[in-house]
Length: 309
Length: 312
Image (cartoon, rainbow over all chains, first blue to last red; front, side, top):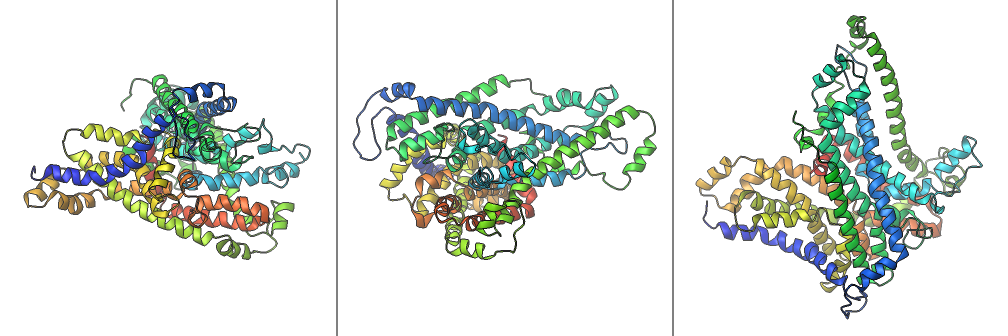
């Protein structure tokens, strides 16, 4: 077994590790270094400026806006998505008519619902964003025409063009595209909870809603918590970038008047639109800290005794 | 961990007793617990209502897009919800040729094909070594790979842009393939390491005693045994890479090399000037349908592959 072991290990690890180091690790390290310089990205020359970029960050109003929006995403989106998905998954698994003495049962056609709910998950977020951009179109979009058709012709919001509504519109799209995934995820977890737990509780006179909070949720806690973190990282990262960049108004999105700017998009704009690469990496470092803090907080708050069943 | 141990498709087995015996069985169950039954009945109606409403909300935008892709530009704007007056297939033809959808498809196929093979090969090689061999630094390398999962990619993209530029990889398809592989490795290594650990070691030992080299053992014994894991992680990476938007947007701006997702966004911008919305919708639906069709056919595997990914 030992013969040529190290040669084999090196041979197998060399290619993946080289690729990973060059395209992932090295840029990460570089970006932290660049955040301490005045590099524009346009010329190869730059000087070391210490923490100037970070002090600038504190005075940058748009940065605070992007931070505020990203934090809103990280708090609201997991709450709404995971909450709504849990609700739907519970309906799927417990909402059925009891038959043949089974205490609880899944609704008829639950596998059909799960197939349909999962549709948005397999679509590119770019396609989803484009579709909803048309739906939100104030003049001829699908939503405002429905409002007209039901007699609400006077209520014709500007949706993505309205600074007060635009951020909510974006969040709705992210919820729409992710809920199905969590329904399927939680549903699988619920299916593995033994039926007799519910039977015992119902015999003891518990209502079905009590069983959700006393049985389903505690036993599903690990899955819920990882789902929460997963959704938060999505909401802070690439998904929110794509949706905001594609859907919202303004050059490269984020409008109107920066009312929808999020941190990853601000990084992108600073680096590739404004030629301020060093400052962009500074915002990126702030985003990294927010992401790590988010994960740490959820894990800390969510710590519970692990239940075996 | 729990959800990966139980296949998500198991959820589908709950409504199993949907044979015709339903109503009779309930009658036979008799009076006791009548109150509870009515609670169940109310809940049943309520849950069906909620579930149907959400199903409609999911399907409507997609159907609306399909419908719109067959309409004329004028009809799209004047009556967004009416059925098309005729099936305007010319929208699709226009999108395929004039709007470069065919090129976007081809580019996406090349990039995803190349990077998927590369990801699975390099990912399984690294995972196998990390899972099966003791050597100094093993833990460190493992966590180095895993760490990549939780970092915001956008942070690395700014320097990466210039790394690629210096290596003349920017705006090339092979450059994009390499980047896709690199950014798919963290999850792939993580998933496959766990998978290789679960495989029995006796088979590999037998192969070794029979004189097979480590390399040969890997390719002829371990990889075939790891097939289920490779399929799961392959589906996960396929969808992620096929739908990727952030990486090509930053690293691949050459109009000729655009992949599907960014091509569609590009199309949305340019058709805005041309006013060819029907062509754009045809393009959107064209990009949407193959993935949805593939999902419906391989539904179980796709769900297993994607949910296995999330929960770790």
